[in-house]
Length: 202
Image (cartoon, rainbow, N blue to C red; front, side):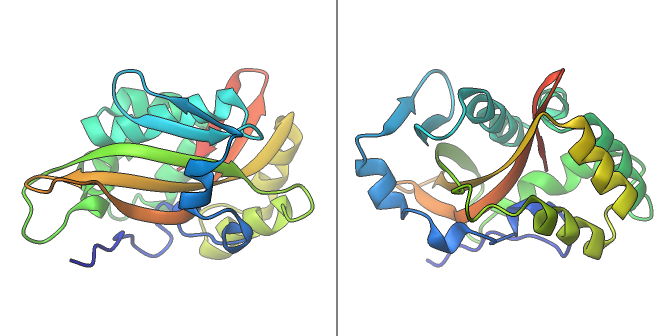
């Protein structure tokens, strides 16, 4: 069965961008690499290349576990706070709040016809090589989509100690199946660090 990661225009924009994903290692080569750190505690398994900061890996793990568990508090902890504010304004015509959006829409992107439930099982992470990473281009995609303006984009750059592009492949196990399948292949997440910690745009 062909499973599609269902995502609306400009909704969770970070997951749609493909700036350097096509130039990354494939999921299989990542899994086989000797430079992969595998973390399996409770919940989602993480396989991250050595070039992925552990703070980003933990942030992304928490983000997808929050989606998996319908945990808005966990989600809030991972998303860049100023972005939450501008995104709330962006979606205000359809939702009263980010929390309403989270509960009503976020997890539905993994729904699949014929299945009542699913569980996210594994995420594989690689960093976009510095020579291919284009922060300005990534931010411009948000500006073009109307999520925020050029002034906010500049504030993000000024606030951040570093900003990066993380490429990910995400697996889910659907109820009744024996093996997990990729529900997002070589998606991208925009992450940053500031004085308060590591965050993503999602």
